[in-house]
Length: 334
Image (tube, rainbow, N blue to C red; front, top):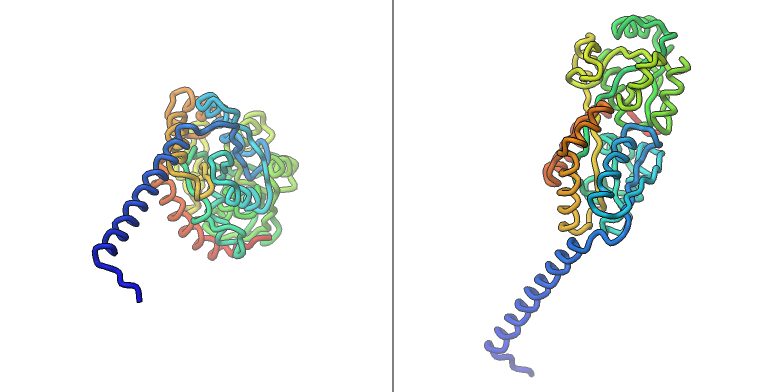
């Protein structure tokens, strides 16, 4: 029978504590060294929508400045489909080293409610770095439709239930949620036609095959200015500076239909905190620069910088709130 003295037991326990503390110290030094050395190579921003979409345009504007700031190439990879879940899953499963990031829209917080078997956990497999920008969606129609205003469109839809349709850049996308908030608040029914991205939805709206589309203003504004699209309302709680004479959907007679389309940057959840902190600091610096604010203003967007903690809290709150809308609107993945 082996006899252990209390003294030796205490020595052993003390040794374990010292070893654990040393390991933590080494780990902390390693993480700090990683942040100092990062980035050593190019960075990829995965965008869940097609080139030319609102999310893509904001992502490219940030990528250009971030490349200069970090001294490394920052490339965009467009990976559309399934409401952004294909791209989100790719990043969630990527090596958490800060070199593969996600730039998603507010559609990100919708997916848990409409895709019950997501291959990733929205709140646990991805971590927010910062929100990037907010930009209005605008309700656009083809001039050939002859709608006088929002009330006229609603009256015509109510007179012919199920005879109308509306587009989105994909089921669960920000453009879809904006349309559903409007449809539910207006008390109308219509057929949802999802596309892979904003450019396709705009093309079909211009042709008249789609009755209306809540398009990101960044993509729709040039088409509105050249007369190819008619704008009926702005989907946000307040008017856009780019379309000061265009009412919000609430002002147009549909209270409770307001929606804010945001774009944010995320990373795999196990990305080291020092890398996340460095990314947040660099991106927020870009968002707060006068030059970048002017750039966003030119495309109808506004900077939306947040700390990582605040952005993750915002994502959680939005996820819970949108789940209620999805249930009320009966939104389901195709």
